[in-house]
Image (cartoon, rainbow, N blue to C red):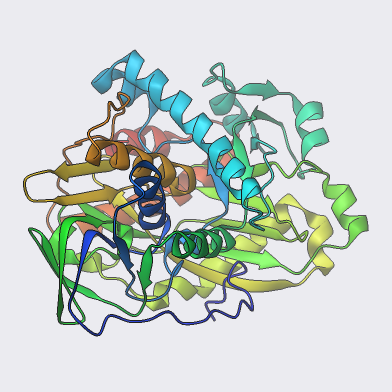
Length: 440
């Protein structure tokens, strides 16, 4: 069962498929946030453009429609690396741009009456042992406020909580609803969307879709983890994130959990977790840990890993024992794209007319909006802010099977590090060895 809470029982009318040659000013490959927001921003800047989006499955099929619903101001690359490689001014511009992007998404949704369950309640990273508490309290900045045990539990009543770090710069939302609302809006302003339309080749001023030639001045590849291996095999790999969600939580139990402002939340463990209380009062929780497949193969079996889904349900009950009587109704998952040095990218060659954007890892809800907005500015020759992902040279992953062995060893080490900290209460020796190798 790979049944996404966000997709739920949504009846979705199939859109037309490519069945003839055609021509457009701009051809966008991929019907997720990157592609949809690219079309949105390009049309805002130049309404006369003839734009088409080509999606192999259906709009919102990939990570954009399956993620944890965090519109955060997070960025995959560490703050330290951004400052070291790009400077403090670029870092500050990035932070400001991401924070503004959250509000812009909310404003666009509100002005168009999109029902996306948007709630800007901030985000809480909480600690359940001394090692986690030490880690989060020693890495604060102006955007994050430390909460002691009493303050953190008042915001979110997690069992064994020791404290937390809170930022106001995050919103919870329903990501699939956002993809559907945005797509309908784009069609309303004249953008064509094709589904069940596989892009087989990309060349200068032309793409091949369902064996039909589509002429275009500019093509934008916005396919993230679903990018064909022939285009990005050495630069990015698919990493699976899985999620589970409960039935609607009874009001009495919800009152015990607290979190009336719908802050998103995660435990400060080494293995990534993320969660929210949804607009209809469910707990939706996700995390990493599924094995990477040799040669970056995509696998539907990785989306329904029973061991991983059971671990997420167990973690949810460890956080909130009050949920023992609440049923878990949904299990799902999907891949996100990870570049070698955790770099997001926006690359555009004006001579060939080819552009590519992506590399968000798990931070794509807000970041895809900002990258797409910046791409539209680049294409329209506007002055763009100094951002680290523009014309970013992407490093290459190690060859297989070294890549396979290293990535999966990293997953195992991360799990072991969390176990070590949970048992000892001290910062993990394993993590101290592995973290520099992850090269974030």
